[in-house]
Length: 83
Image (tube, rainbow, N blue to C red; front, side, top):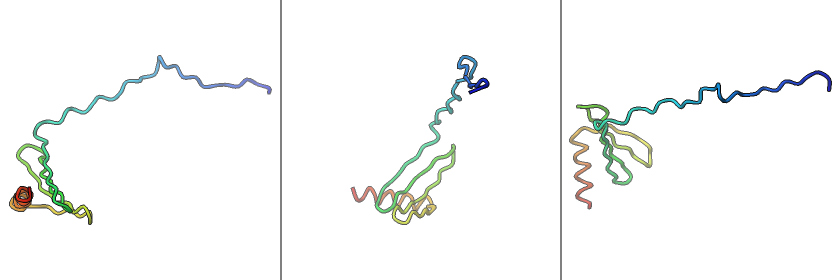
C-alpha cells in the first residue's frame, strides 16, 4: 500500500472520566406501603410532606384505580382480617 495510514489514538490521561454525581438520598418523607390481596396490590405513596396518594393495581388486568383514604383503610383492614 502506498501512502501512510492514520490511526486514531486516545489519550486516556486527557479524558474526563469522572462519573456524574449521585442523586441525593431519599428523604424520610418519601415513604411507601404496599398491601397484597391477589389479584390486587394497594399502594400508599407519600411523594412529599403532607401528601399521600392511594392506588390499587389489578395485577391480572394491569388496571390502576385511585383510592380514597377510606377505601385504602378498608383494603388494609381486609388484609389484617385474613391473617
